[in-house]
Image 1 (cartoon, rainbow, N blue to C red):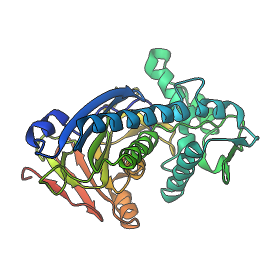
Image 2: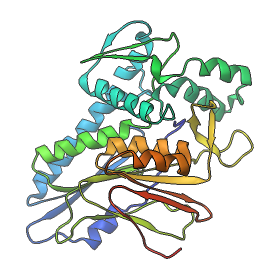
Image 3: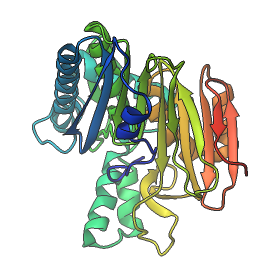
Image 4: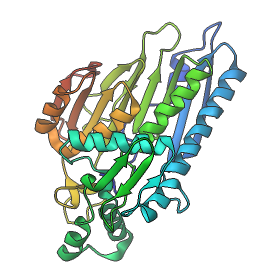
Length: 335
């Protein structure tokens, strides 16, 4: 799971989209961006009225800000921060959005045999301190903090109560929260009559609504660490998310970085970047991190057990692994 904000991992330029896909006679293209959740959210939307599209985008941004106030573990007064302080052996009532995203995260934990685990927050905080220059944690420190982690200790009581069966458990929604916010933003746009739009959460999660005028889908170029393959996906009413290791190594190994492996309690070692395609941004966001942690072999097995999802693993040496159960991933250049 993440120990820092992910860098932009899926390459897309809304300005290129605006120039390549021109507004038609009846459709105006409106583009806006806003810094939220520690990253830049961008929305490009088509509508007959540019004023209406602009208002819809602003409403979508407001929804993302609202969700950030619920889910942020950086804001000490967020709902999640309050939950992390008060839910130990005590059931706390939470807003429906927070309950829903935690419930979905726990489902992913079960699906991945614990590789995806939002209770990783104590380990995340430990390695964040190391990245700030406070020194690599000792084995004893790591083992002590690992005892706090375990999604099985999260107790969900429908419809809106959560408690922790541990005195030190804390949650970090960094591997699913942005995806959830993107889905809710898309719902806001749809409720206001917007049918064709693209939402980009810092390059790491992208959701496509409909398609640009005179096109069947949105063309999205995925992250290619090898710069040799140019993987692409045609998105329509679907999402793609990308995960990779980008932070400097704390262990003398360039493959160690900002995603923590719950099994070892240490930064993940991997040569791959992963992009996952699904119908919702919540799923693609959680799935990309899960697949990076699982690796291609186990990741493919997981994908085959799910509906309407696809994935691609790419290394810096252009080693490629793909599995398709949803939108097909294309290649712009030959291997």
